[in-house]
Image 1: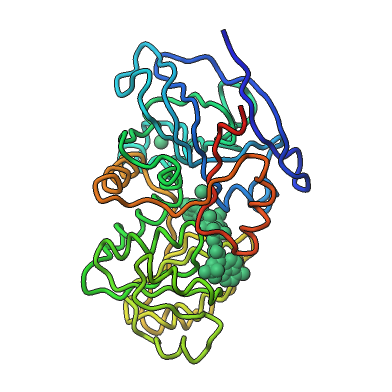
Image 2: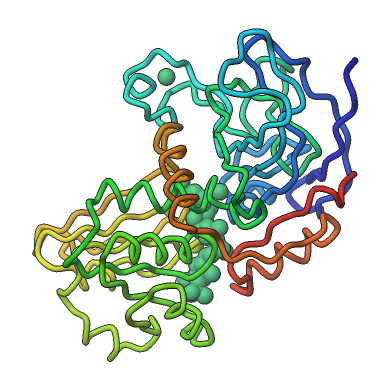
Length: 348
Ligand code: NAP
Ligand code: ZN
Ligand code: ZN
């Protein structure tokens, strides 16, 4: 019997999210069905619900920081049984047979299926995300969650966590390095925690002076107000690695100028508007300007296990689903400490 799934959806780029119901596919042999307990609110949800990146299909049910309990499994499923905790991040499928899939980098598969707003071969529509009561996902894309973790505070690891963990690992950030994090939002606050946990000396760049004390509590050694030109100049040519998590158009050249020779500026923030580049800020000191997209399934599991082991969680504000539109507005005002997480019980 197929039960209805309750959700919140945007009906157009201009409409607030409102209640919506639909039907998930029946559980296939390799599928896990999860009753969702918590879903984090990522800035990508706002970009997509409001069609800021173009290409949103409506109705749009966002949400890709999902934790819940397994309520049904298909006959081939090995990793999970009913009653287990489980999590789903930004991807729910991929071809499983290309170079990226074989290298455990499913996020770069040409056929990757994102958790929401991707073509869904099972329904003929688009995928619907975690602002909903349940989800059905192929077990390869379902992560294991330890019973002893704080579930609400772990949900944002599924996007904000892996999106910052992966580039810091790939960039070999660690002891003896001076690392900058730009923006203290959902991604930024996890980046500060991870870079600090990996042994780097962390500087946070922020536009919000009132976040200074929090940044230090989260692991920043120093906080620089990015609008303060003198403070920025004092750090010229001193960073090994800077991770930029900013969600809107801003000046990248100022951060390139803070890198040492051969230093790296890695972008994860996904401004909908193009950003001008002064090529001399890259060529003069052989800087690297790179980007990173979430992380593969194996690395996401590694990050979840490490966080459970070391007690790393996200700083969250729990909300009911009917607060979601206000939460979006607050996120746009950089007023979130530091991730909203929806208690999905409020949808039932
Ligand atoms: P968020 O919680 O809203 O944090 C963004 C932070 O950026 C803000 O808190 C603010 O920090 C800073 N900021 C915002 N507008 C700014 C502006 N105009 N100039 C300078 N700084 C500004 O967002 P999030 O959920 O962390 O997501 C951040 C970005 O990453 C979004 O674009 C999202 O779509 C993208 N993203 C990318 C990936 C990926 O795989 N690459 C994955 C997830 C999300 P301060 O107050 O400290 O200045
Ligand atoms: Zn996200
Ligand atoms: Zn593939």
